[in-house]
Length: 164
Image (tube, rainbow, N blue to C red; front, side, top):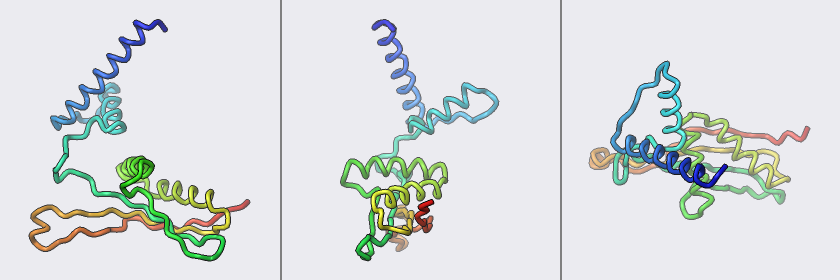
């Protein structure tokens, strides 16, 4: 591919992506239907986040997701591993993946991924319990009425090593 064509392709793609971001910031949504192009655009907007509205200091901000893995290490001590907490780059990336899984409502698949990670990195572990939770922040009116931020569990599963 020649350099001129490559540069033009990149400009077209970036322009396309920025257009979808602008439409998302303006809170415009197109209904899915029989049109393949419209369905493609909607899927692209959902998967890349280009269709999300501007939500800084907004009640539309999602709650922080937390994944905890409870397991016993090879010496018999109980261990809790936390995933998705802010502070490290890897946890920011994990948090992004958790939001995608949450949006698609594939909780068991998300939990299986965390369990596979723990079981793979700790060969002496036989079982791991994964809990998925979110840190729920009430709206201003709910806070005034007395509701406080809290952690709400939305999935729990136990996974057993299968050495077959």
